Image 1 (cartoon, rainbow, N blue to C red):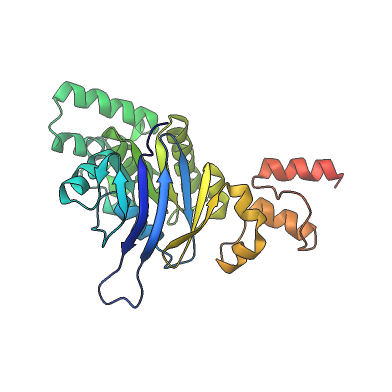
Image 2 (image 1 turned 90 degrees about the vertical axis):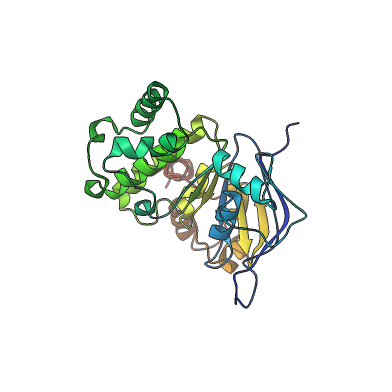
Length: 278
């Protein structure tokens, strides 16, 4: 069995002057090709963990903190992790740096010194993959929110990666932009890239194979999305809410547990209602 791409045990991190640590003995493993959603209340450590996985912050300590074979406790390891781990932040404005979309997608490759022809081919591949060909000459500030986030994602993935970290990538988008980005994430998933997806939108958790719930810097749940949302007491304690389809099903049941698994998608809700004769 292959070693996990993300292999973290006992990870600790505290911000200077903070009353309590952001991460306090956290464990997380992510296998090749696996998609893991990170959920939890504000301040639970989700975004801090995302930055640490990407090699963008220095851990205070850990029994083990290895990402793509790189030791995050070592300065050289963190630098190497940044090459293998791509991260997409909540605000795409922080990642768009060039004068037009095509140049933005090429930016990281230029910094790595890719040969011109190889770089051109890779940029064309990314523009096509994220439906950006018609926007190649558009200035980033003229793009919609969803287009900006797709451009940023194309730039992140133009450099071949082994792990993709997404830190609430739809939080600042309208419904149309959100669906654009989710479609791009589904494409990445279909390609088999390992993903760590930080979200506060419970309707997006179904994109993942597993969901890890954080509370006060530690993992308090690690399992399948359906198992998490079956534990209504834990969902309430963590102030997570439910996917919209589950909320509707629960409301129709009078807020009582139905005795069967709650639907997580619209298709599952329709199937449940048709099956019940509603």
